[in-house]
Length: 308
Figure 1 (cartoon, rainbow, N blue to C red):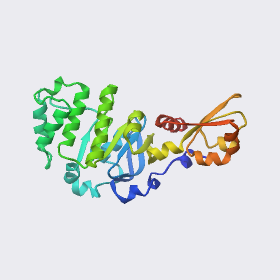
Figure 2 (cartoon, helix red, strand yellow):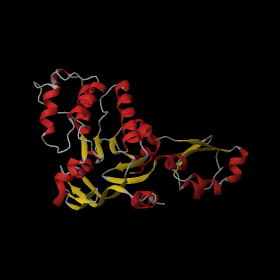
Figure 3 (tube, rainbow, N blue to C red):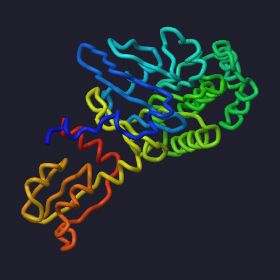
Figure 4 (cartoon, helix red, strand yellow):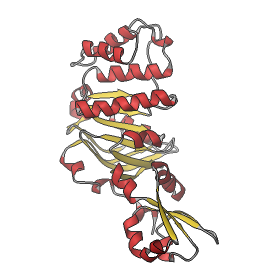
């Protein structure tokens, strides 16, 4: 079976992805001198956290920038809230909160001044809510942005992104370079935002533990293409690692496995659909010649990277 046959289709994930979507990408392509993105077809559900996972250079940030209309795709269509950027860019961006991988501020200006500067670009800016967010994040309004740590700058970016009450929050590698305590704090905040305020969140990261902690859906990007898009819990229930003794399984089963490692004593492989494998190796499972264990998102990502 080829890698293409093993790839999960982004268009066939679940019915709830098409019933109430917040974002749709259709046949998106972008070519650079040494990198090709797409073709990407993706429909993201409203009211959930969707994580985009992939190695550095896989196309995550380019995809995010196309969603934000910061980069123009060579072909394809982007629809946000059912609207087109060509006709409704101002309306769309008024309803989005964006945090990029790098935080850029006027270094000699204060946190309070930064909020007032950004507020002029949003029709629904809520100054009282911005002040509350600063208090919640332990950010002093009088502090200059050059005095903020990287973690505090991310918090400031998030406060600026949330102060106009966006429906969709888009975060591009927001936790990169942060220490584990600050990372956990920010992730827990996102969970609360979705749970309490019913927002939609798109977060890209190469840190799979972050996505595993908060995401409802995951999209795996490898070499500019989305290889999997699926409900996270369903994905982890289906993908499993198999340990087996020599000759415990046949060649037909081995051909279905990723990361197959064989030896005379014990072999290992990863399946993307344990139910299909179990139908073929039922007796081996009962005898103890075959053992099954859970995988994490890293295992799945590495499987596709190695297959490429």
